Length: 202
Figure 1 (cartoon, one colour):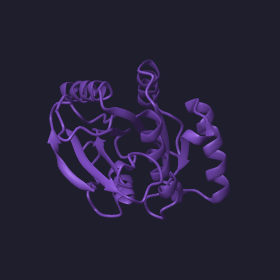
Figure 2: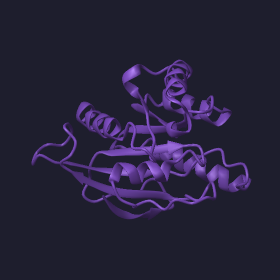
Figure 3: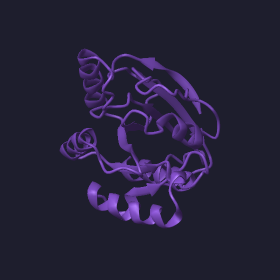
Figure 4: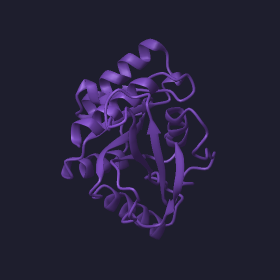
């Protein structure tokens, strides 16, 4: 995975044009950690300060490890779009409005094939999560929900929370993946699901 750049606007043209998958979630949901786990390397900066991502960060993914997707030469090629976390209360009003505009316009990109929506498995969806859910439904966006920080719960608690969140998010079982960037749980499944998403929507 290769870092392409940080962009203040969502209408940036990427060359070459490739399928895109956006990563969205509340601030402090573990987005950078999940990206690093998917890449198998430290590509995204992890900060203890929520709301650190303020721009559209773009990564080029070229890998042969996934089974589906762009297989012209046996490899997948796509862009990961790392978007600012939403719901960061300490950001100023103008900054929050700017984040929302960036998110909304990014979800309208022509090459976008879907979204990995990160939700903390320990908590019920927040008001901001519900707002994002409405945006995704209205845009008829293809969604994979990554339930993060599963290592914080016991096995029985994880199973229970997975069932509850599937119902709360109104998503089928194959679109909800329990993950932990710390233990690696669900990372291979998420990679495969992203590959299938690219293959199913191209």
